Each structure stands twice: as C-alpha cells, then as structure tokens.
Image (cartoon, rainbow, N blue to C red):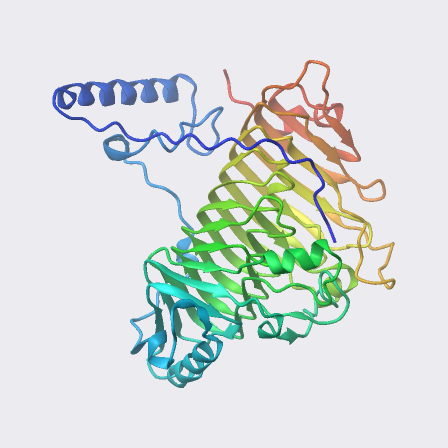
Length: 495
C-alpha cells in the first residue's frame, strides 16, 4: 500500500479572521475602513494588471466578506450543479419508527435495515427520507436505496458498531483485484450503496462517527484479516449529494465514490486523529463529474485523493477519473498531502481542477504519485491559488511505495504524466524545496509553473528534479534547470 512516512510536525491552530463588529462609535469608523480597503484592492488590481484567474497574489477570501463582498460583487465559483436537484420526498420517517433507540448502547443495526427495506418500496413512487433525530445511534452497516435522503438532525450521531461481524465481508472492487490492504474480500462500509440514483446524505451538521480505533489497532497490531471498511462508500451510482455533516474516525478512507458520476460533496467537516492510518478524507475513484468544495479535513492520510484502479486490474477495467473539481478545501495531514493524485491511477486521471486550497502543518501540499507497473495516465491537471503554512514539501511528484496487488503486475506498463499546470502558490515556513522526480523510462512532461513563492527555505536548498520537463515563470526561489529551459511557453505578466 502507498503510505506516507514523513515525521509528524507540531500542530498549530488556524488563525481565523473574523469580521469587525461595530458598536457605539464603531458605527462611524467602519464605513471609512471599508472604503479604504476597497480602494486599496482596486488600486492593487489595476496597478499589477491582475485578472481574477491568474494573479501574482490573491486577496484572502476572509477579507472579501460581509459588506466588502457586497461592494465588490464577489461571487464564489461553484460546481454544485453537477448534482441535479430532486423533488421533496413523498414519505418521511424517523428511525424511531423502526424501533431505533438513541442511547449510544443499544444496537440499531436491525432498525436501520428495517428502515431501508421499507424506504426501498418508494424508490419508484415519490422517494423517501429517513430522519435520524438527536441522540447516539449505534449501528452496523446498512445499505441505502435510490431516490432517498438520509437526514441527520442537529445533535444526531450515528456510531459505527464495535462488532466486526456487523461490517460484513463483500467482494473486492474489480479495478483493484483484491482488498487494498489484504488479499481477497473486504469489509463493507458503514453507510453503503451500489447502483443508486438521486441520493442525498445531509442534515443539520449531524455526525457519523465510525469509532475506528478498533480497526486502527488491528492494522497496527498486524492482526487485520480483511481490508477495513470505509465510512461512506457509493458504487456505480449517480446524482449523489453529501453535505452539511461531520464525519469522523473512519476505519479506512472516509468518503469513497467509485465508478460513480455527478457527485457533489460540500460543506463537510471530516476528522480523524492525525496518526490514524489511511484515513483519507475524500477519495474520488474511477468517477466522472465530481465536485468537492468548502470542506475542512484533518486526517492521517491525504485530505483529498483522486484514484482509478490498481495496476493490471485498473488497466483492464479502464474506468478513469475525469472532470474532478476541488475548491476551497482546508486542512492538515502531518503524514501525507493536501491533494494526492494516485498512486492507484491505472484507469487514468484527467481534467482535474484544484483551486483555493489551504494546507497547514502537513507533509506535502500537492502530490502526484505513480509507479512502474501502473500504466494509465495523469493528464491535464490544473492547480491554482494554493496557500500553505509549515508544509514540509510544498510540491511533490514522485514514485509510490512500489506496491502491487500480486505477482502478475506488468513491469513494462508505464504511466504517462503530462500537462500539469500549477500557478499562484504561496508557501510560508516551507521545510524543503519541491521534489519533482519522474520515471526514467517515462519522464513527466509539460510541467508548467507560474507565480510560485516558497518562503522559509535556506539559501542552500535547491529544487530536486529528475526525469521531468516543462517551463516556469515568476518562481521563487529559482526552480531546477528542467523548468528553466522553456520559459517562453508560459506568458509572464508585464510587471
């Protein structure tokens, strides 16, 4: 398995910028302050000939809020229209209607299963909604149905069962050929769905807590028999919305859409202990039209990952991940990256847009990882407007962990990495320079960087580049020679 082995750094809390609230005499001063700020922004924009898409620096969104935002007419971009709105559900029931008891001790596995069997009756006749009220609802795995909404009220907590038998064994995904951690089958996710359409998982910031420590202990103790289950996994599904919830302590990857299309994941808080193994935040896997925006994530692995299958199994299935948009994601992961592409990318990854990303106290900001035997491709990746603080390696392209599903992998299957565009990046208190290492037999090509500022590096530190080619413009400190040879490819602004 691809792992991240960087040493955990000391964590520093995010400093939030709150709007100034006027009171008393403050009512006179605030309009003057706002006017001065707006004037400064306008002058800065015009004097530097900056447009909104390509900027040498961008004004933090925290400043463009409240009345200032109204003056500027600022409107955040969104990809939420990937999800097509659904009508109100015809049938609405509470988990209590099926015998559920929210005391945190009583098992509700049968109650959730009865509820879902009942809700499935309305898949073709108006749809249904299951409400989970305030309380602590202990349960094993349950399967969702189509034209369905799972709604967690404020104070509602779904707790994952501590009995492994309530996380049944299911077949391995065909694009992996086996469980990701162990040979053979794997545990099902806590909230699961296969072949679904028009599903909403939402609420009033309710919580799904996988209580994953039991599973992490099995992994640490090397007593895990089958690959751990995810917290939420949807397979072969379309038109899915997941929003306004807190997901925490997943046994394995937290949200895993695989072989899906038209998925929107927004306004989510995803939490796991920073040493919890492989607790990725969101893994878009062999899926099309995926929108991830306005999320905060703390995890023991990648905050966001884009995948598409493992070696010969991924190549055979050939289900790519494409048209993936990641916006306004914040978080920390001391062992891995803010956004990771790969290393399981054998079905191909293309047309990925990552913008307005904030990563702190992490091993890497963005990482592209692949390996000999993967095959597949990573092409047309755009990363724009990224801010980092105390990130060990801000930009990293590298081989994976040389892990393969079995001995049948093909050492002649080489990945293609081409067309990576990175712009408007600021990293403060950087620990190490970028590491851009391709594969000798398959160099990474068309790597283009523009407006990159990495602060905190010692003067003796230099970019580490090998088997790559591309161009750069307005990069500090100076990049490696492989990115200086074709400066004319990128048009620099006239400063």
